[in-house]
Amino acid sequence: MPDDELLSVSRAAEYANVPKTLLENGEEVSQQVRGRRRYYSKVALDEWIETRKRRTIDLGKEDYAKCFDFALAMYYRGYTAVDWGTSRKREAGQSITNWVRGQLGEIAVQKFLQRDFRKEVELDFDLHDEIVPQDIIGVRERGVMKQPRIKIGIKATKFKNSFLILSAADVEPENRKSDAYILTRINLPDDHLLRISKPELEKLLVNERHFSTYKNKLSNFEPVPCEVVGFVYIRELNREDDPARLAKILGTRSVSGYRYIMAAGKMHNSTEDWQVLANSL
Image (tube, rainbow, N blue to C red; front, side, top):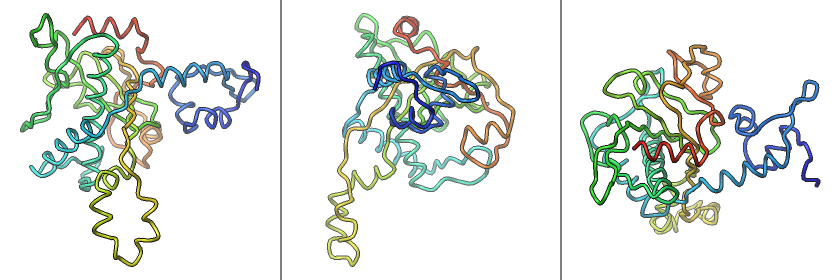
């Protein structure tokens, strides 16, 4: 296959092993339009694939345990989130998964800043009566942990998603809004709760009727890939009011209210950009 070959959206998505929507919506890989069709350069795709690898950090069982502990503590203290735009409370599995994913994103950013910019930051894993406004609560300077000079919010989404999506509560209240928002993509398996509890499940179910049909499908826990995608300053956020567009972005039938969004490809993500942010902390 020639290096400069142009691939259709479907072939490009297959080549990069990503959903078509990630390429179409994320604006992370430049497109070439010929007639009514869009194409992607194989060279550009290779560069994007390598870039994603460089900014992805694998988090192991100890990191997962820290996040799982926080998620269970939040759940059992009675804090249950609701789905955006509805009054429907999330089930335990969904709530725990969302908290685990969110905390993994914070640890990924912490390790990313330490690894690439030698910037040591402190995260807040304590329990609070209200949602913590900022995710980075300390920065080490000359051996002393000090309060950050700017406010940082860290948001986590699934590995296949293309947008940073913020509610009004994330952006508008003076006591909640951040100066910059970092987007992470977390490749947390849907069956992560089964993977972490596989040994106990095998003991519990070994004599059950259907165990033989799925015993070889129970996967072991593996490190969770977490991509630090980029960041955006609050002044750069776009308010989206169109319900149809929001419903498409969120993958739901209907949406109430508005959101602040930014496509992944429009975010700051160069080494120079990150260095500026790290120096500002």
